[in-house]
Length: 219
Image (tube, rainbow, N blue to C red; front, side, top):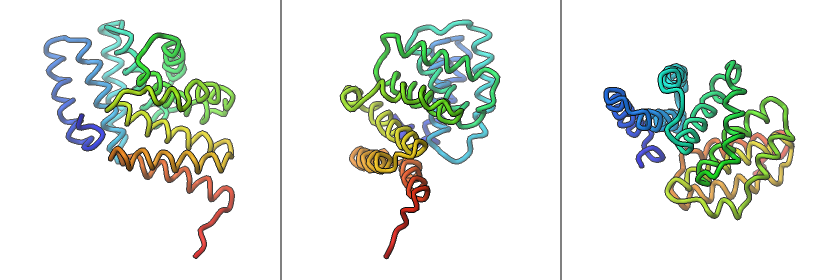
């Protein structure tokens, strides 16, 4: 619950939980706390270098436990790993494996929050590698009706994150008006819910799009 509003404090608690689960050899607890630590590092939005360590940690967990306790836990881990890779190691040799895992999970009967998070973190890979048609397919899987079914409080994070990725998507494709509309909606959701930590990123895509289209503020 702390992560969206105090990522640093949330990370500290999750790292302690991770160590506790290690001593008890509890795979479910390990994978869930791992994914929480990754999310906390990202939401802190200062130093992403700790991601390198947590990639290694996950590789060790995968080698030891071989499979995930549940599909839901697998979804959380895949979200976390893609979040790491497209922000920190787009060149990672196993990124295609994790993308394929995300695409496979999207056809599973998973919680909607997890599915939106999978799209949030898979679509940027296709944008950054120039596969715009695949990115479009992923973005089209969800619309306003699907997002309305998201469960709070996790749904708040996912809705704002989806606004961020949508802004990114429209900016990349040169759809300036749609980008600005999405930025406005994302900032509105953030204001209503108090989840403001991604505001600079969302607004940044709007600014980037405006600069591309030579739309400068005048006074």
